[in-house]
Image (tube, rainbow over all chains, first blue to last red; front, top):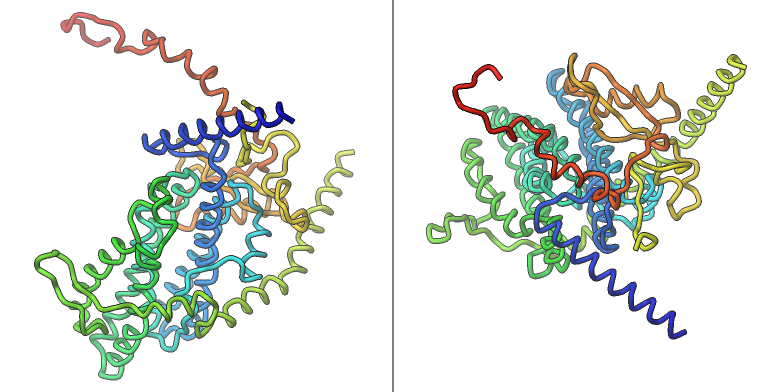
Amino acid sequence: MISFCIFTLQLMGMEKDMEQMFQEKIDKEIRIEPKDWMPEKYRQTLIRQISQHAHSEIVGMLPEGNWITRAPNLRRKAILLAKVQDEAGHGLYLYSAAETLGISRDEMYEQLHSGKAKYSSIFNYPTLSWADMGAIGWLVDGAAIMNQVPLCRTSYGPYARAMVRVCKEESFHQRQGFEILLTLSRGTEAQRRMARDSINRWWWPSIMMFGPKDDESPNTIQSMKWKIKRFTNDELRQKFVDICAEQIKILNLTIPDPDLKWNEEKGHYDFGTINWDEFWQVIAGNGPCNKERLDARKKAWEEGAWVREAATAHAQKRAQRLAEKRA
Amino acid sequence: MKQYINKYYYGDYGEGKNGAADISTSGKSQQEWPLWEIFIRSKQGLDHKHVGSLHATDAQMAIENARDVYTRRMEGISIWVVESKYIHASNPDDAEALYDPANDKAYRHPTFYDLPDELTHI
C-alpha cells in the first residue's frame, strides 16, 4: 500500500514536470503534434472546440442549402453551390483534425445528434429571404473569419493547418455576401427593403457569435495560456463591430443599433447592449430552428445508413474478387 | 517514464491500429469506413505533400473523395492515398536520440569553411 502511494506520488510529480515542459513548448511557439504528450484537459478542450467548429460547418449548410434552388440567376446559383460545398469541405477538414486527438468520427456525429455537442447558435435562425444569403455571407462569415484567422496560429498543429485552408477559402464567402447586399442596395425600393430587413435580423445574432463576454467566459484564460485562443471574445467582437460600422456606409444602409457611435477617445465604436438572454436561450435549444436543424441532420444520417453499409459491402466484394483473381 | 505517456494516433497509427476507430469508446464505431491519409502533388515537378485525411471504403473512393475535399481550387494534379494504418512513424520520445547527433556536425554545411573572399565560383 505504501509503495503504491509512493508510486502514485511519483506519477503526480512526473505529470507536473510534463505539464511544465508542455507549457514551455507552448510559450516558445512550438506547435503541438498528435503524438506529443499533452495534458488531458488540453486534449478535451480541443476535441470540444474543433468538433463544435466542424458541426457548425455542417449544420451551417442547412440554412443556405435551402436557397440553392431559389437563387435569382445561374451565376448566383453556381456561387451558392460552391459556397455550400466549401462548408462541407471545412467540416471534413475539421473532423479529421479532431480525430487526431483520439475521438472517432461516429462518436462526434453521435454527440451532435444527441444534442450533447453544440454548434454555432447562429444557424438556429431562419433564412427568410434571398437577402439573407447576402447578410449571412457578409456578417456571419465575416464574424467567422474574425474568429478563424487567429486560429491559423493556434497551438495544435492539425487544427492550425486545417484553419489555414479554411481561411483561404472563406474570403470569397464574405465577398459574395457583400456583393449580394450591394446589388440589392442599389436596386428597387423593395430590394433595398429586403436588404435592410435582413441586416436587421442578422446583426445582433452575428455579434453574439463571438460568445459570452470575457468575464462570463470561464475557459478563456486557460485557452489563452495554451494559445488555443489568441484573442478574447470581446476583443474580436469589437474589431468586427469597428469594421462593419464602416463597411455598411458603402451599402448606404444602417446597422440596427441606436447606440452605435464612434468613440474618439477609445478609437473604437461604442455599441449597444447585447440581449444575452436570447443568446443563452438559443444555446439551450430554444432558438427558432434548433429542432428543425437537428432533425434534418439526424434524418440525413439515418437515411444514409444503407448507403454507408452498401459501400462497405461493395468494397469487401471487390477486394474479395480481386483476391480470387490473383489466387 | 514511457509507460506513462499517452499516445494518440494520426497518420502514424502503428502496427495493427485502425486509427481513432480502434481506440474510440463507443462500440459502434467499428462500422466506420477506414481512414486514409491524402497526399497531393500541387504541380508537375513537386513532391506529393500530406494534406489531411478522410474516410472511404476503398482506395478508389478515397481518391474520389480527396478530389472533392482537397482539390476544389486547382490545388493538385495528382493524388496519393494510403490507408492510415499502414503508415509508421517515429516516436517523439526518440527525437533526441534520432536528431541531436546532427547538431554538432556543422562541417556538413558549406558555410563552415572559412575561405578567402577572392576565391570565386565555389
